[in-house]
Length: 214
Picture (cartoon, one colour):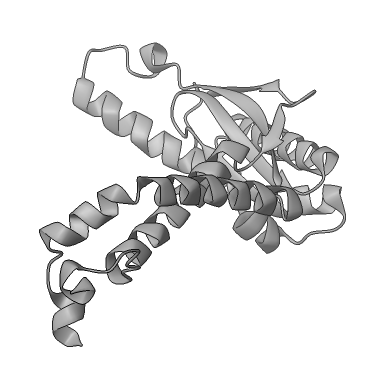
């Protein structure tokens, strides 16, 4: 049994697999249909995206050309801003505005930060209701921008040259967090893999061999 499981496939096995192209092509189609069925029966949550423009004003903060210092400055300040975005104060403020979720639940399950560098910071919120996803993303972006401005004004650890502006907090784009095409692809690949294993490990002879005929 162990020799059968761990031995490499023979030429005959590979030929049988190639000859079964109709079988695993049909399997890929069936797998894609199963993926589509899963998508519509149990769809993934919606994803809404808000955007906050972050400008470190590097030219004013570091007027001399010092690439190494500029790099560490950007990295340091970006980490500070990221900590603010995921801080307990910001999370709890968003949770209070939602009235249904705790800050820890938001941080762990509902919210995701993308592009923590200079430029547009994207604030993603996930929920099975489109309006709630939009509201969470919008509130998070607003709370972040307000907290950063407050820290800059009070000189609370952030460079005074940093500027933030919530540029997209209304009419937020919403889409499924995982697309239908991903479900189709995953279903087709999975079923194709299982079909290939079936063809390799289970031989279904359709005709008698010459020896059996004699």
